[in-house]
Length: 257
Image (tube, rainbow, N blue to C red):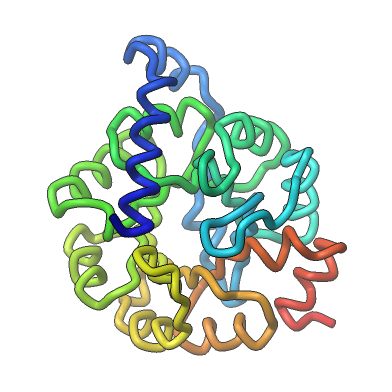
């Protein structure tokens, strides 16, 4: 199995242990925080940062302990993040829905549930825990799943960030007329990073779609390159969680001194 296949196998096993009755999760959805407008938050003349709460990754191992994800999220918001990404996958990324709850309660900007969404239950679960955005990874989904999950996301009031890392995946993504597309420079099947993917794919995305550059963003030059390729936003995790000063790291990334 590829790395992506292994992760999804674990996601399905973990989901089976926490799945509740649909009536219970629908009750939680009804009581969830109102959805925040992610499109407005990430659209603008200046490039936005989606700052990530990320403890570890399959490629780098442990990055940071993050004992208080709410405190980190508040720091991100204060430093000017446009949105916050929260890893909720446990086995490879050390995340949880508790992290999502804590972050959602702490900040007023949109929150992305960053996980491997392969079952419709996860979308109700995401909304119940206050997510405004969910990630749909084209490489992990069939054509019908991508369409159905995008429609389900919209029906729940959330936005989907459609993630691609090849031209074929981008073609599939554009077929569902998404509001946001993320170009991931990391191949999830091999974990290799190739920044040339930004230059190849971002310019092909219509200007009316929010374009997010993902993975391998750690310097002001990286951000500048992504913007030059057409990105409206960059998703940054490792550089922020490993830095000693969130505000300084954010200002450095955005070349603000």
